[in-house]
Amino acid sequence: MNDDHVEHFRDLLMIWKHELMEEVDRTMHHMQDDAANYPDPNDRATQEEEFSLELRTRDRERKLIKKIDESLENLEAGDYGYCESCGIEIGVRRLEARPTATLCIDCKTLDEIREKQRG
Image (cartoon, rainbow, N blue to C red):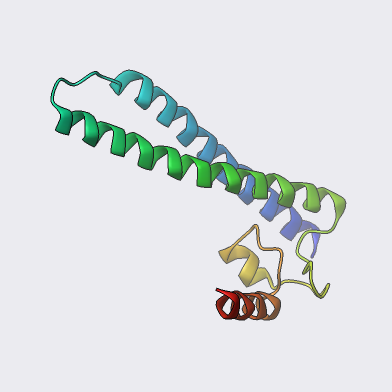
């Protein structure tokens, strides 16, 4: 991976992380501002379900932020873009589609097949 690719993926990962962090802040303010004690049980249930869905989404994004941080660390260490399983270079097109990818397409396909067989 050349220096232009490294810079491109660093920028891409940083922008993605920044957008996710803004969503976290927006959710926090939304939940604080919109928290109301509705007298109607249906309204309360709707609000609780909405908050629950938002929290689940934010939890998934929190895990994604962790993966982004790991990708940034790998980028700094010079390990970014190489498959953790077989060690070959992950294609740039795959990294464009999923910048946090840690497996090449072949290893990921095998991983998914094993997962289907187990579960």
